[in-house]
Length: 229
Image 1: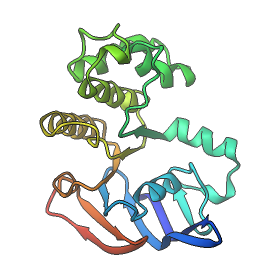
Image 2 (image 1 turned 30 degrees about the vertical axis):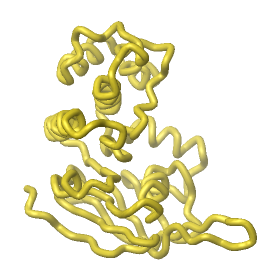
Image 3 (image 1 turned 135 degrees about the vertical axis):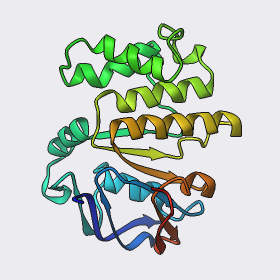
Image 4 (image 1 turned 60 degrees about the vertical axis):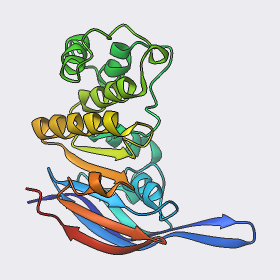
């Protein structure tokens, strides 16, 4: 199975006053197309920094990332943005919906940017799949946290990304709502055949994935394959 993400000897440091803080130290792993992959670890272990590097949102100090067959280190900022728009979807802990747009308008923004024909139909279909067919004209402020995250799910899958990065997708939700969002995420992902990378501190969520990469102190503690098929 071909690899959609290759991470080799990745390192990242930040200046912290007069000292240098090593956030990631010699991280290597790969993910095959269509796999589900969790990155876990306590707060401060480097999970979100690693996700940002994998998606080309930041550059490493050491090592390399190859995403969808492209070496990110050889690409300009504009070229990385084009690659993300075409191949990558995102889901965030704080939803990151545009407050002045309705649920439907939020979902179809990526489609309009890519020049999709009839984006409204696609958006309506996806909002129907996440159970929000009666909320399409509501603004984020009129939606609960769970509803906002379901809009974010629909938006993430709208442009049919090759790989989807989810950063603590249930972090701002109560347990029951979070479970519903997780079920929808995996259902949509299975239907679309997308590669899924989830950053989480929730081991129950992590164990729903085929692989679990555990980080501690910016280093790889383990890289395990689960029994999930």
